[in-house]
Image (cartoon, rainbow, N blue to C red; front, side, top):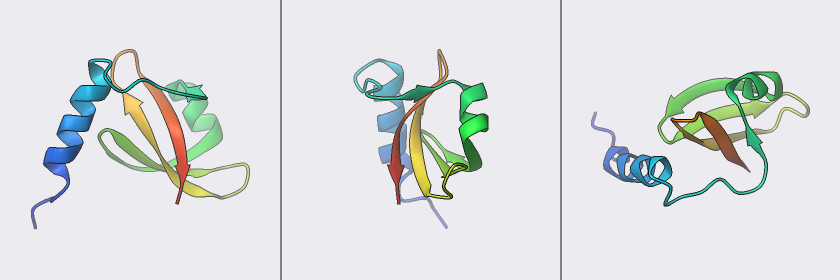
Length: 75
């Protein structure tokens, strides 16, 4: 089954990587991400996670280089 979000996600990933979408608020390195969250899956520019401190599930966005995760959004 085709991924209906792929084109939208590719455009968003390009915007994140070229600086059109900037991280706001708290950011995490890969090491910090694995300390604070359990990672379930990636679908660039998103990663699905569970916050370890309270079990809240949500998503983050990420930029490839330098790798940074940002904008935790509970679901």
